[in-house]
Image (cartoon, rainbow, N blue to C red):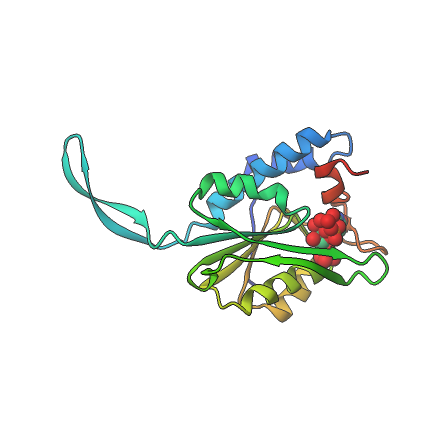
Length: 210
Ligand code: PRP
Ligand code: URA
């Protein structure tokens, strides 16, 4: 079981998440909110990144200040819905490389089907943030993180908006070493694997495909 779950209770994140859940929220607003929440979550989820001293010169003279050590990060969205979170995170970490993992859930088996994987070449020297708005059964996130682990990154963290208890448990069994950052842990999955109360189908709401 994964005890490594951080739920962000920041009022701005919770307020924006409520608008996101509302079924009357338009696709345009939905997209903007997903990006904004991802940006706020990224700020919190990167709190433990190491810093190093650098010498700089201000207009007033020399000083020793802090820089991110190595600055080697990668953002890996799980397609499609994870794409909605990339911009928010990338705005906070503009030097990050961006990889992509394409997975969709088979509607009957709920098992993830992989159709694309392109990761930065030097991912073994990077800290990776995997993003996907929904952790439902956990199948997609488990599979994506397993693919990334084969390439030996420095570290992996998983960031989602809403997590189901079932997904947290399944993910923790396979990847107990990977922290989950989310904005809410919801009640349960329904009989067709959707998170309740959730926000519906994240991909369809981001891209307006329903
Ligand atoms: C959604 C979501 C996750 C997955 C979560 O993607 O974005 O990737 O379902 O479900 P799981 O935890 O049970 O695997 P979906 O398969 O609907 O594809 P899409 O992003 O292309 O819409
Ligand atoms: N994928 C979604 O987009 N929403 C859910 O509730 C579950 C999986």
